[in-house]
Length: 320
Image (cartoon, rainbow, N blue to C red; front, side):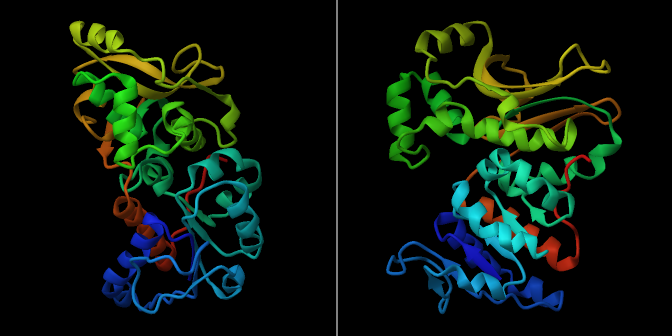
C-alpha cells in the first residue's frame, strides 16, 4: 500500500493502520506500506517507526491500493490517473478533486475503484448509506452544514465577537487557512454538495451548477436579528428539485447562509458539529451528525474504506 501526503490526516492514517493491525490480521491480511510521498523527507513526523518517506512516487508501481491525503486537484490527479487506469483502487478524502475533475474520475467510480467516504463528513458516514440502502427511497431534499470553520465562526459571532475577530480566532486555532476563502467563501461546502448530489440526484451533477454564497458579509446585526426571532444563521448546503418534490425538472444546489429555527435539526443535532438532513418519500427524514473534520476522525473513515477494500466491497458508486 502507498500513501500520498503525510500531513495531519496522512500521519493519522498510518498510525491508525498500525493500531488496527489485529483487525486486518483477523481478515488474514497484513498491510505493508511501500512508501509515503512527501515534499520534505527531513520534516519531523509522527508516524510508525520504519515508515519509508520519499519524494519519489515510483513506489506506486508496487502498491495494490493507494490512499491519497495530499490535497489539491491537478497534482494528485496526475499521479493517480495512471494508477486508476491499471485497475487498482484509490482511497481519498479529496472533495475538491472529486468535485472539479468528475468528468475524468466518474468511470472509475462507476467501476468501484474509488473509495471516498471521508470526502464529505470525515468520520461521519453519509456516502455509504446514500450509495446503498437509501437508493430504495425516492430522494426529495437534503440540507447540511458541512464546514467546521464556518460553523465555528458563526458560533463565535453568536457569543458577541464580530466576523473579523471570529475569523482570526479560527485561523489561530488552525481551523481556517490563510487566505480562508475556500472555507468562508462556501467553496469547500460546494465541493461536498456536488459529491453528495451524485448519489441522490444526478450521477453527472457538475460542480459548476452549485450556486455559492459565503459568510463574509454576515454582521453582528444579522446574528442578533436572527436570535431575536428564535433563529440561528448557518451556512447551509441545500439540494432540492426545482418545482417541488415529485415533479419533473432540474435539481437546484445552493450554498448560502440561512436563518433556521432554533428547533431545526441543523441547529439541535448539529450543535457544534457538522450535520445533514436527508429526506426521502419512503424513508422519511434522516439526520446524520458528528465530527466533520480532524485528522483521526478523517483517518477513521479512510481506514474504514481500506477495510472495505480488503473484504471485497466495491468503492462508492454514483447514480448511473
